[in-house]
Length: 608
Image (cartoon, rainbow, N blue to C red; front, side, top):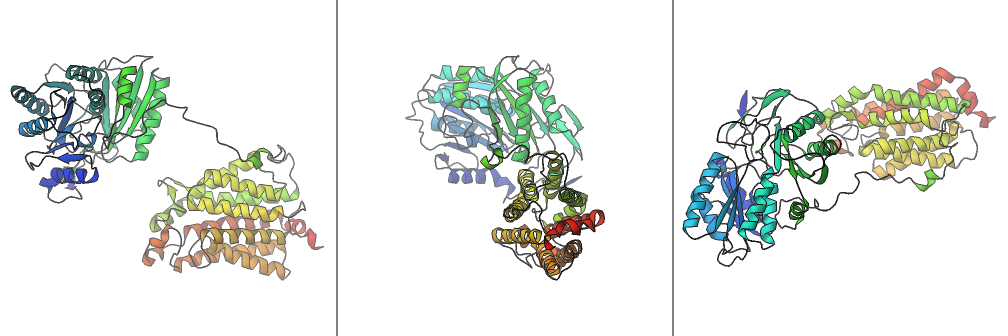
């Protein structure tokens, strides 16, 4: 199946020249040669071949791999980049123009990725430049470890490891060393780096159709950066499994001389359409495996999109063996705009302890542990909490359906997988079994807030933490060990007021307050009229459910759903309000079913 690819472009034939124009407008240290469309060369604005007193370092190749290589032009890295058309080697004339523009008496190193077209065109340009009197050296980079060694002459493909080789060459050149030294260090770097990629999709060329030849649920191991077939097509696996396979292929292929105890740097490279989150997940799995399973000392980690393949989904891993000299070259300063900032320097421990608030650390063990024996109030709290959180857990699927309709992340799933409300509920359930001081109502509410703050993200997490902390402060003011129905109502009132104050919402805003404010009003009204506590609680929960249901007819004025049209919102009630009504209602019914009339007796003692 194929379909027309969507691109934010003009004429597909102009994408490279328009990319270059945008690049030099963005970075004031860059220029391009005025030779479009035949000559497409990006160069340092501060370098003139006639006067440049250091070795020029030039790389390049077909476009479509941005930021490679034009994004690495800058002091301390490339002096110029030669850009071909998309996935096509640059012309000899274009390469020659770049050499002439930036090469001075010290000469020029050409760093070339190992593809036939690049080798031929850069090779011919090098010979022509030498005939004109320029000092030229060439280093060919072939770091691909995906394909088996063959008897052919093509050799290993040049992949993202080329970026590391360029950085080494640029640093040596910037230090003022000779052409021979620059070429020698670049060649040494090229011989100790290996790369393998994994793709979830092929790429789409500008103006062309998008192919889905991999199919659903498939990935390709060793897919080339031009979309050429890799070593194998396999079922999609968790990234942990994929990383293990890639590392084994690189380190056990005999392509690179890396053995246990060696020092290495690692590059996790996105292929164009891979989110940073996924790249960081891959990085987080790669480093420990290299250290623990392969016995390597990981000195630096570079994670990002360095050499892409247009909009291909996937990543590659490059591993380079380093000594102190190569490490210094990689750490050397550069003004190249797309070299990763903050990657140099020694690696501190990945984790550091989470500081505890002083108030919590000063609390007694007895206060922060579950009592061996629960009082009647403790039993009531336990039943209410358990019912409330289970109601949320059981609502997970319907909450997700509602939320996907209106696009409001407050009750939405973390990356469409896990509801934040569900995370908070499960954390409360787990923590209650360990250390909730259920015989102390105020401290229990406080601990619920701590569980929510720790486990629940999004706006809802903050709002529910505020809710619990405000209720805790109100309950804490009560010196009696038993909390009365009136005091619970006052705590709910304080919590609702705090959420309204900091969240900016009120009745009619299509939020959780549309469930809690009606519940509070009925609870206060019934208690004032002399209704028993349990009945008041249940009746107020009915008001919460009705209030939540009414949000279906409201236009949102808070949360991300406020950006959604009324027509879409009218199809579902507000997920946050429905969740609030669900836990409130579940708690009320559980208390009624299990403790009525003992609940009334316990909670109304102060009235006698």
